[in-house]
Every structure is written in structure tokens, then in C-alpha cells.
Length: 303
Image (cartoon, rainbow, N blue to C red):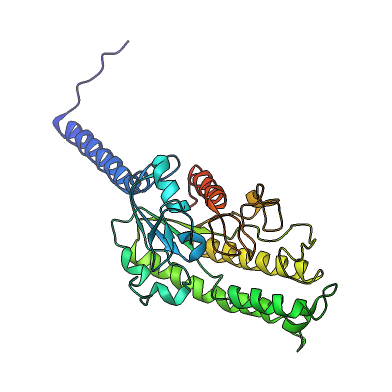
């Protein structure tokens, strides 16, 4: 066997240079990977969590109310996610009645919700859009119209009277508003993991009615169910286009809608029997949404 020659000084220099370059490359890779670990990938713990949203996030009337102006509970899903150890701190600026406009403008004493974000934000949840499509006014209109035709679909006829489904159109018009919010979230919190949270199942999945517990006409239940599904589908698609994760809270709450018995429902009807706003999640509903968020956090994000 031939003896192994000793490297010449120039060869040693080239090897040291290659080793240094490799080390620098590794450092660069590790440096680029570090933010993903720090900002809650997979089972990680986020340092700073900001919750944006409307009343489905804030949890009106659910004990204990910690912000009466926004009807915000300390047992809403952002609080439960934080209590489960998924964030070291929570800045919950969700507010009852919020639309996408309140991301940029104050709502009573609650400042613009986007102002809570900064470059140190690790996790953001956003649940918005229900008030943009006029959720409350839809319920009021359909409840009033039900008296004119309890077995029919007066609400659907009202919203499609000109040959166009105005609720479906409003959902489509809300999409760019939600997209604008997500763009702003990315600009203000560029390193954060962003989750868009959908809305839970409000009405029976099989389309059956439950008048007078929920005072809608019998054939309007499927129409209103499908309208909520359109809203959730829009949120899912907008989330995907903006590299955000979508949290499906509809599927885990099927069978717990406001038509169910008080002991079984997670959404209260228009006359609640548990502490919650009408047509909103009760404490069990907020717990269900928290579980859905936690389950999504357990899956590594795609971006």
C-alpha cells in the first residue's frame, strides 16, 4: 500500500476554506430555520400569541367577562389555547360586533385590532367575516319572514328575489376584505404562524328545522346552513391563497347546533339557556373551537 501523502500547505488552505464555507452554509441554514422553531411549528410553544376576531372569538356572556366593552371572556378559545401551554403570553383584542373594518379602526375603547401585532408576534388567530355578511341582520330578517310561511322558504325567496343569491354574493364580496386583513397581518407580523378560524355548525347538518327553538321556516334551514358553509369555504380558500392555516370548527361541532337539547348543544339558540349570546357558542362551544385550534397547531404549517 502506498503511503498517504501529507497535504501541501496550499491543499491544507483549500480544505480549511471548504470547511469554513460548509460551516457558514450550515449556520445560514440554521439561521433560516430558527424562526420556524421559535414561532410555534408543530408542537412548539409560541412566545407571543395575538387573537383577532369577532364575538365568536371573544365569547360574549361566557363567564368570566374580562372586557365588558368587547364582551370578552377569559374562557374563550384564545384563552384556552394559551392555558393549554401553546403560548407564553396572549394579547386578545377580539371584540363583539367586529368586522374586517375594525382591524384598522377603533371599536369603542378597543383600538384597531391590527395594532396588537408586531415583528415579535409568533402566533395569530383570525376569525372574521360573519358580521361582514350581516349575520345578525340575516337572523332577524329570516325570523320575521318565517311567520309568513312556516312550512316554506320565505327567507331564501327574499334573498334571491331578483334572481341572484344576495347572501352568496355578499360572501364573495367579503373575500377581498379578509384577504386584505391577511396581507396586513403578514406585513406587521412577518414571522408569525397565522391561523384563520372558521365558524362552528350553527344549524342541523341534515337541514331539519326546530321551530320555535330557532324561529326559521322549515325549508329555510338548509338555505341558511349552506350560506354558512359558503362563508367557511371562502375563509378556507382565502387562507390557502395567503399561506395561512385554516381551522375547521364546523366539522367537529356537527350535531351540537342550536337545535339540540340544552345538555347537548354547543351553540345557544335565540333564547339561550346557558351563559352565551344568542346564536353563539357557549363555554362548551369555545372549548370545541380551542380543541380544533390545538389540533391544527399540532400539524406543521405548510409555508
